[in-house]
Length: 449
Image (cartoon, rainbow, N blue to C red; front, side):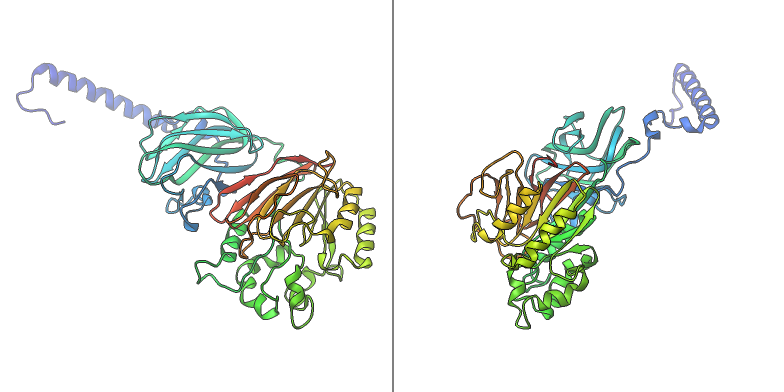
């Protein structure tokens, strides 16, 4: 402030003292440049551990504002939730257990007045490490935190505007444990009943949206549970539709055929085989197996479960298996609450897998999401049973739930999406992720038999 000419000597003297002190402080800061901003805590020296890590959210305003934008390091992008709804959350998988010391949140105009920051070891049980009840947007720098977990979420409970919640960037600082992620950890995306005869030019076309969500998750590989291309799976249709969306990651896809692949006028599975080639026939047949970590995966063709050759191959394959955990997938589910209902064609295969202490079965055919409690081939809930998940919401028109089956724990018909399956050397868990990036359902975590 400029002093007026009539300023009293007392004020002039005080100003001189202040000026001297400022000069002295400037000298100190020049001598010790790392102390230039006393507001930055020592924990700021901890590394940034969230950049580019997988993220999910309770909702997104549109595909352009998905959760990953808040962790991409680009302040020009952002995550934005659905408008006018509380609560909403965004979470990041740090990839390993981290001791979190600091979180910065760069809010867009749609900010939270009340929120909390939580950490979790497993993505299910959460511990709060910071709380804000009078937020005013802008940049929030939360320091001195002592949370520990693999997952961190920002959980908004009150909005500052009539819109939603929107973050340009969320940064998590801390130290990752040397142990890293659980032994053998990897992620797989799965879906069935995928490419209708439509393209992204139509707003109602769903398979471009499920493909985009599948790709954002960036898994180790992808599984398809049949009916990859509608209506009769001609090679021309594969090239015109499936290839434009899910085909972007064909090299990382491990497919199986559905009943629509048998309708090809050129011959059953002709277009399917022509499109996928050795990817779908790595062992010269439309059924095959492979290993990842401590898991043995078995891809089956349920169109030919009545043929002894595949059944004998399955028995021999299981006899050779050396992995502790087993997952199998095919098109027709033994248990389903959807329009097709239970399909007994799969029961002989279930009996073989149950006898081999298999853990997980994935199916399509009915166009909905459903998960079942562990059960035996007769549909009785048992502790050593097989978990079945129906994931037929990859893009084909949804089917309604018709008759709820015993042991069905959760059913969703309507929102398209994909399964995000997280495997370790000793178990697995999953989420059903909608095309809006939101987790529509989170299944239990299971230990392998």
